[in-house]
Image 1 (spheres, rainbow, N blue to C red):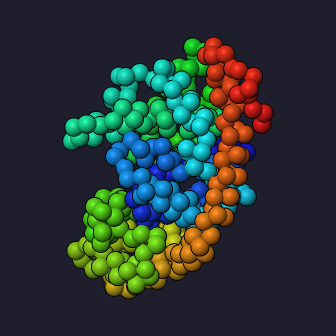
Image 2 (cartoon, rainbow, N blue to C red; image 1 turned 180 degrees about the horizontal axis):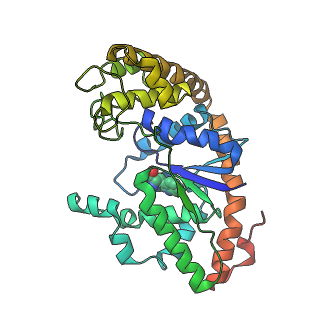
Image 3 (cartoon, protein in one colour; image 1 turned 120 degrees about the horizontal axis):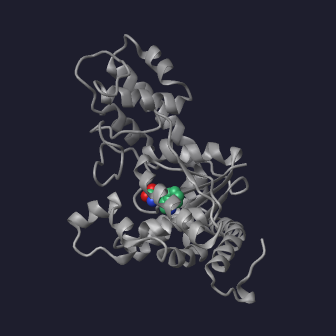
Length: 335
Ligand code: TRP
């Protein structure tokens, strides 16, 4: 079975775009693959953070992932900082990645244009991500399109390492959501749904009250004309609603288009509001249940970290040995 790895940052609230585009795919992936999913708290340190909020968000995201259907018995779900091998491999790979290639990363270029004092950690973000992926002999990395460049860099680093030190790392491949799994902002449907702070009305949060969910969808910006038709260029608002309807009702875009052909925008919005509220209801309920028992979350995350380490430690050892670092016997783990 292919090994799959993906990560989600514990920053910001989980929204419908994350749920449909990423987490929903992960839930499907967990049975078809040997899958690891990671709450990447170390990546959250690359921009200024509030410690108490980081702790709370880390728990919240881990709980939400389980509430959304990631089952700790069917996949490995863990918190990045619980597996110290991620930081250790990052240092090794820092000496294989080059300053020039990190400087060319879009994320760095964009942020450095507007931020005065970015941390070294921010600059190094892609190497930490490469370590996440390479530590598990990962075959596939399901990500959004914005992460394409990072996965390509991961391949470059792995290839360079293998070339210099002998076969060590598996070369991973990024996989992207199918068309229709990209949820756009409800107020600005040519832009991807993203942080709620940027667009509170255009972003549906997974934990929003059902009334709020319905309200946001009913107030979604639609397009001129009145015809319900799937046409992302000419009708981005309506097309986004059709995609959501298809994704959340488990059908195809063509089927949703047919269902609403000849009807008004209002009918489409009501239907999308209803399928969204119904899709999120079990997640909210399960979230409430799970968050009532934080000790159970800690227990499950400890098991996840132990499972992750049993895969990561031998890969780190391989990299150490091939790079010529002397492995002390005491650090060696079996697994
Ligand atoms: N950089 C990713 C994002 O911002 C999160 C991430 C960190 C990740 N490590 C990863 C994704 C490893 C896939 C694999 O969305």
